Amino acid sequence: MIRLMKKTFYNEEEVKKKLCDFILNAERLSMGEKCLEFEKKFSEYQGRKYGVFFNSGSSANFALINALVNLEKLKKEDNVGFSAVTWATNVMPLLQLGLNPVPVDVSLKHLNVSSEEVDEVLQKTDLKAIFITNLLGFSGDLEKIKRICDERGIILLEDNCESLGSELNNKLGNYGLASTFSFFVGHHLSTIEGGMVCTDDIELYDMLKMIRAHGWDRDLSKEKQDKLRKEHKINDFYSKYSFYFPAFNLRPTEIQGFVGLEQLKYIKEMHSLRNKNLLAFDNIVKQNPNIKKLDFSHMKFVSNFAYPLVFESKELFERYKEKFEKNNVEIRPIVGGSMVEQPFFKKLIKSEFSCPNSKLVHETGFYIPNRPDLEEGEVKLICDLLKSAE
Image (cartoon, rainbow, N blue to C red; front, side, top):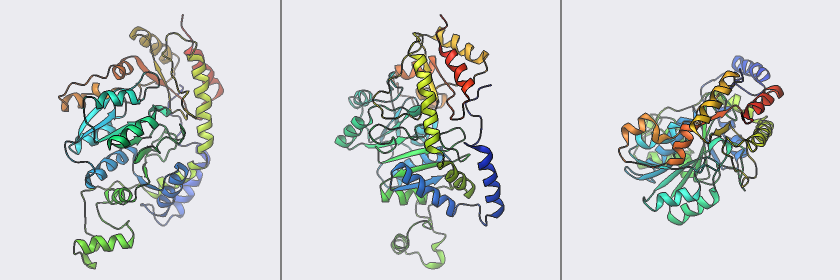
């Protein structure tokens, strides 16, 4: 079986040995110095000023939206756009925090939201923010989307959980006010479970740290602690157990921080291998009339998470689905498919939304493995299966 995810980490044997030594010798395994070091080194790698490490990418998504609500940059019943083809926890925080989620259709050229789709939504609906998902290592024309958002005062956020290392002119994840990342097993960088929010905004950074840990001020600078305590008339006795904003416990562990630091050592190598596999697959697909062609020519570099296939008909989808499954290649729907088609969305959202491209992706698409540890024979088999059956 060629699996979508084979190992917990890249260079797994060596990392597991180091992890065992770390656990045996660590004085503390709850969030501490390793998490802080990982935040610093990851945000430096990404090219952002600040990073806040969470226990999952989904928690990072929720914390980001919650932070903007706490800061009153978003308020209840504000319209927030989101990429219609995404993961459920891009949409769920909007619902859970009383915002109005507005799906934005994707382009079939690269399966991402482009400025044309954003313009189309804005002709009908005012948006306070838009949460763009950079799907599977690809992106739309983010620079133009950013200009639209800047001109109209729309907060731009990026879910970059599947596109770590991909670049337009800048790295994906660096176009909006903030971006989220996932370090779940099988993602570009694994900490088993884990996620990050990166930003250059100090106010947002401080709020994210409070949301991660109960709403208290322990992770803030002394100056900011003193300011909050003075404002709320909190004395020293109660200071460590005072809670200033609605929040949660979304903290990671030192185990996750340690593994993240180890995996960062291989990040460029992993990106290079993912890109190499992508180009091999894409070269075959370009010759197959049964599969829609991807266009990522506008991108400087693509670190592909998994290679998506959208077929020209439902019949072809079924035929290739059976073909891959019979040859023991693990496949799955493209991310979470169209959120407009998901049961929770249909149940909670009564408005009618038309996202025809996203529905097509949902009904006639699946993705195939692109791991950095794919073996030569596995790549060859996948390439053979990508060839036209006719």
